[in-house]
Image: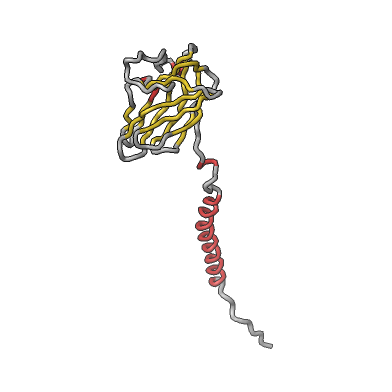
Amino acid sequence: MTVHRSPARSAQPLRDSARSGVRRRWVAAAVLVPLLAGCATSFGAQTSQMYQPGPGITVHSSEVWVLDAFIVTDGRGNGTLVGGLLNQATRTDSLQSVRVVAPGGKPLSTTIVPGTVAVADQRLVQLGDTGAVRVGGDVQAGLNYDLTLTFRNAAPATLTIPALSRTADYDTVPVGPLPSPTTPSHANP
């Protein structure tokens, strides 16, 4: 009796088929992993939210951004506006007037010591460094005050800011009584 054997199948096509399946899985993973990772960071993701670590308030509602704004008070009713003004426009602007309203609606006296504060385009101006904006009346630490900054070109910026005591953190901020009336100023009655 003669036994016929079928020709032996080559193992080579199976290995090639297995290898191409592995390659396809790796390619699929390489494409899908970045896509799936992107789904976890949508527009509302926490990492996309503004982080405000300082005690002041930041507002981007105008061409001139107001950054980390608050009032430092000397405990005797006097205060100085601290914060940055960042001009996002391509033209120079200037801070023309400041209005501060106490809780209960009473406007406080304000003075821009040099008359106006220039805010060059694409530049940051730190108001607390020079003490350019002074507030008088009854500024008390721990209270929030309504602030409106009016600029020559940009829309006004309105925000509510805290008043803080002049501690060691703010001992370089010039705080004191409002300058005499002979100094150019914009006072709010």
